[in-house]
Length: 136
Length: 136
DNA sequence: GATAGACCTTCCCATGATGGGAAGGTCAAG
DNA sequence: CTTGACCTTCCCATCATGGGAAGGTCTATC
Image (cartoon, rainbow over all chains, first blue to last red; front, top):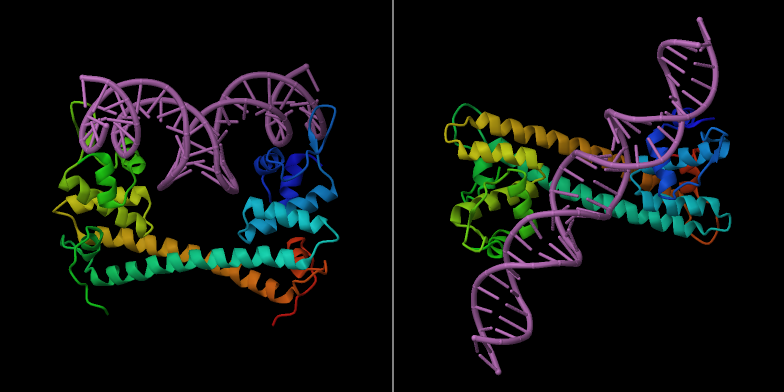
């Protein structure tokens, strides 16, 4: 299987497969006589693992750690859970930040009449106006 | 006021002030004879606007548009509201993605005993195991 | 005045994960 | 044997931010 086939078999682009190889996340595969990369079932499995991990928002670094644990048959599942739990709290922190932005913005949008007139509480807020937009 | 003072007056780093100038988000300020940038009250106001906009998660591009509207006394507040509303939906899309990740991860973490034993439903999921982790 | 240190300037490089594209080699079908 | 679809490596771009080097300037203290 060449890189294009591996890409469509895994949903990881050829570009990214080469990149993962370059940064050492995956091992360099065998090459044909004409220098084409050759992938087998094992590599495909690894790439699918990586893809799933990325889909769940793990960084490449975390993905590498998870991959190592996956391949370590003597691992402690506690280590895996710790990585996942850390990731959950990072995600929750991020979500809280975004929700705080949304909360503020919704309030401002609600207060803005949004027509042809120029006066706009959204801009007033950005400009640091201390004008109180009444709590809804 | 030199760039360092402007930075502490606005919470925007000197690095970023220079960057905003470079990309055309702000106008090049006057310079002293020794080529130091000089900022006044207007520039500080603009920088605070930018900072607030970035705090609310607007991109630099959106921030530029908002800044232009702010300075356009004949603006229609509807345009501002449209930018803000678009940003809210982008944020909500992002939040939903992250929440979906958290949901999956919490379920997996809940199913993992997280001790010294190697078997781990988190890794099983990443590896694409079709083993059903029973819905809670 | 000289010197020290805290600033300023420009320039280059790095991040993280991904894509675009050029220049050149290879393979398979017609 | 040509054509088109692949492969290879290499460089560049994204977005917003920071680090740091090399060199110039200002200010306070001796």
